[in-house]
Each structure stands twice: as structure tokens, then as C-alpha cells.
Picture 1 (cartoon, one colour):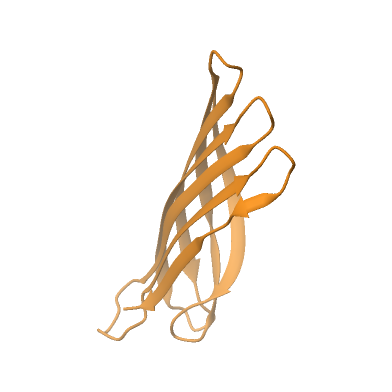
Picture 2 (cartoon, helix red, strand yellow; picture 1 turned 45 degrees about the horizontal axis):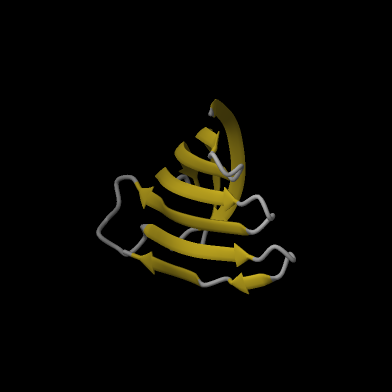
Length: 130
């Protein structure tokens, strides 16, 4: 098997629970492990952890934590089975008890047959201001 371990700078913006746009930056740490089994199928697992910080135009500061895992199986007939689970948290520092922390949790599963047709794509996400 092979393992890739990378740290990648990231920067993006999004709307916080306060309605303000926040600028987020930091580092994405990603580790990918890939193996091939005896039948020739490839198994790959990716773990991502984010260490980020954010600030709004009004000066509100946030800590951002995010972790997700993806698993992929590509069989010898090119069928694909993949699953993703992840949580993203935008937590305002020094908050005053208002519901200004954003928590997003998501899972999705994709199955593609050997003809390239999607046969299942259930997606479940929740987003909550706390």
C-alpha cells in the first residue's frame, strides 16, 4: 500500500450564524492510504483534519475545527463504492451566550456500477446554530 501525508494552506469565506461573512484560513492536514487487494480492487481511505481560524469584518474571532473521513473501493470491473462522513465547527471566541456557533455534520454514500451509472447517492446533512 501507499500513504500520502500532506499539509495544505487553505483560505475561503462563508456566512456565520451571525449573518456576517467570515474569512477563514489555516492548514488542511490530509492523509491518504491506498492498497490493492488480491482481486485487484483498490481500497483508499482519506482522513482530513483542519486547523483553521476565522475573523469577521466586525472583528469577531472564530476557531474552526473540521474532521472528515472518506473511504473508496474501486473494484476490478470499475464499480465504485464510496462513503464520506464529516463535521465542521465554526466556534466564536468570547461569545456572549448567543447562538453564534455553527455546526455542520454530513454523510453521503455513492455507489456506481461497472457501467458508470449511479445506483445510490444518499446524502444526509445537518446544520445548526448553537
